[in-house]
Amino acid sequence: MVPVSEQTDEHGGAPTNNQVGGVKMAFLGTGNMGEAVLAGALAAGVAPEDVVATSRRPERGAHLTERFGVRATTDNVAAVDGAHVVVIGVKPKDVGAMLDRVADTLEPGAVVVSVAAGLPLSFFEQRLPAGTPVVRAMPNTPALVGAGVTALVGGSAAREDDVALVEKVLSGSGHVFRVAEKDIDAFGALAGSGPAYVFYVVDAMAEAGVLLGLTRDVARRLAVETVLGSAKLLDETGEHPVLLREKVSSPGGTTVAALRKLDDGGVRAAFLDALEAARDRSRELAAEHG
Ligand SMILES: NC(=O)C1=CN([C@@H]2O[C@H](COP(=O)(O)OP(=O)(O)OC[C@H]3O[C@@H](n4cnc5c(N)ncnc54)[C@H](O)[C@@H]3O)[C@@H](O)[C@H]2O)C=CC1
Ligand SMILES: O=C(O)[C@@H]1CCC=N1
Image (cartoon, rainbow, N blue to C red; front, side, top):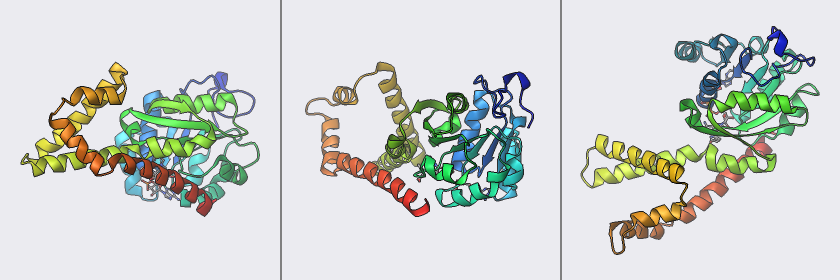
């Protein structure tokens, strides 16, 4: 491993002053989420030439090289050689086999970052050499455009420097929150899966616009702009969503007529059920693959 000498401490792992210049990263399994986290790492200042991304299919690797200028390979063992930070981006069912494959090749002190839903820190710590620093993260796909949110928590062997380094790398993806591990499934249910709920709502609103006679292109654009504008209004004013909703809803007007239909359809209750189902599925994934 060739870390930046003045940034490297005696434990032989990643540069320790939380600067990302010189950090060598390996992404093992670079699909939808891995690609988004990779984009964020580059935005945070990790150099493309310090990144290697693996995939099952060479065509996927070619896409990653073309888009980001990173090295790509299908060889996971070779990829971790020399890496300070190793992101495990495969599906939960494939994580155990991936760890078994690369555990012996990890650099001493390399930080292993998991984005897998459900799998606890202990899952990794039991399978990796004793003392391996592990960070469990729950990102979301808007990371691809720097607008993600990520929860993270360090394992028992992760020092503050290790967690801070991962935080710095992930901050290029958007906002990063440190959480207790007990809360990470809830975070995943809300924010990890959350973009899918928003896309579902946008699609439903656009479809409704088509029902009312708008063209598909116009209906979709209106739905997207409305979601963007509403999120910006929430963010920039800091006002409670209920207050902002009331400001749209004129007495006896059109909006209350529409909202009544959403209440009739049980949309709020469905969201409560949906997030509980996502949280419960995280727990099942841990039980199935742990
Ligand atoms: N998609 C999302 O919004 C989020 C996903 N996650 C987590 O991210 C992880 C990945 O999910 P996605 O990116 O959605 O799945 P994906 O299927 O898009 O990506 C997984 C990638 O790993 C590759 N892969 C599988 N086995 C491999 C191997 N042995 N060597 C090299 N590459 C291999 C697959 O070919 C695929 O490209 C999961 O653990 C999931 O729980 C977490 C938060 C959000
Ligand atoms: O659906 C999933 O399992 C992953 C985890 C959070 C978002 N996507």
